[in-house]
Amino acid sequence: MASTLGIVSPIQMHFDTPLMLQSGEVLPAYDLMVETYGTLNAARSNAVLVCHALNASHHVAGVYADASGKAGELGWWDNMVGPGKPLDTDRFFVIGINNLGSCFGSTGPMSIDPATGKPFGARFPLLTVEDWVDAQARVADRFGIERFAAVMGGSLGGMQAVAWSLRYPERVGDCLVIASTPRLSAQNIAFNEVARSAILSDPEFHGGDYYAHGVVPRRGLRVARMIGHITYLSDDDMASKFGRALRRADGALDAWRFSFDVEFEVESYLRYQGDKFAGYFDANTYLLITRALDYFDPAKSFDGDLTAALATSQARFLVASFMTDWRFAPARSRELVKALLDNKRDVTYAEIDAPHGHDAFLLDDARYHALIRARYARIAEEIA
Image (cartoon, rainbow, N blue to C red; front, side):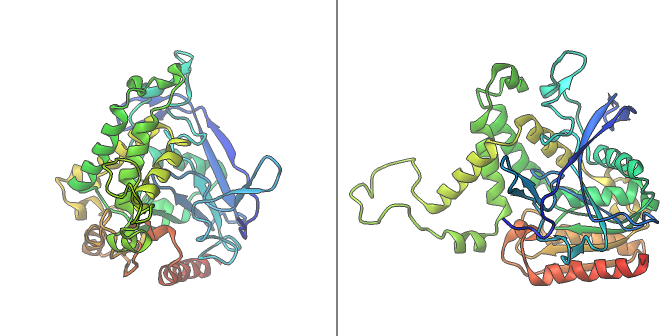
């Protein structure tokens, strides 16, 4: 698939300075996979950090070369980032970082624990959104970036953007929070728990040490992903894509045979997505990241007062939500907007009537892209 950025390559950054985690544990050393697009200007003022969601990575845009040297895997937000796109790499230097604990090259459960010579597995330390942000700040330091023109993310990436505005308020110019929330609802935590339970109950999980057994808890991962996909799409979008269409003809002789095989198109879609996910994602990583999602709550240290929690923020905010997103509903974004307004912050809020549910933040909605484009045009003018 074509990309205006063309073929890109990631780099691996190694850090020897120990990282103190929110849990009290310490990572003595670690690696982070990083990808950049565009050119950092002389003043180092045009850098934008793009934070990724649960199953994404540092590969934000462009394509990787496959074994033959031809263009292969497309970045997960390639429609947003690139020359002439809403986040224009002719103007900005864009950085994507694979979070700690992920399974795309950064140090995580699949990595070798120096203390044992074996993969960390379930022994990998618990991580939080704040830990990811602290690690990202060291990447910025490595590039000599004292302040990001913007930090941007959708879903879990939006949580990281919020955390950046609180942990490093002087280092963020604009904060773009898309299809996200300042804290998960009880329903969201419940969905995550069901998905984790599917993995934990898989006989091939082996307490998280499945690497040593040469197996993968595919059944658990498959179910976890199927649960996720149901929540990422709106009811209307799922109906328009699949409806109640059957994979067999209604007049087939076995039409009324009692069966748990795939009957409906929507079942086929979910099983395909589940199988695909189980083929490339790590189960321990899934457990780790969903728990970090659950724990994120800036207001917790302020007796639940989100306004008080956001008092230290200095960035200008653009908050966008999608009306059909019931996983990260607009009401959660409005909570964030209200708390920012209570603090008299510069906030722009857009609630977009797109039919695609939570996945809308990844898709080509003209109104949504125009909103992002206008914000970055404003930022570009100010740093010119």
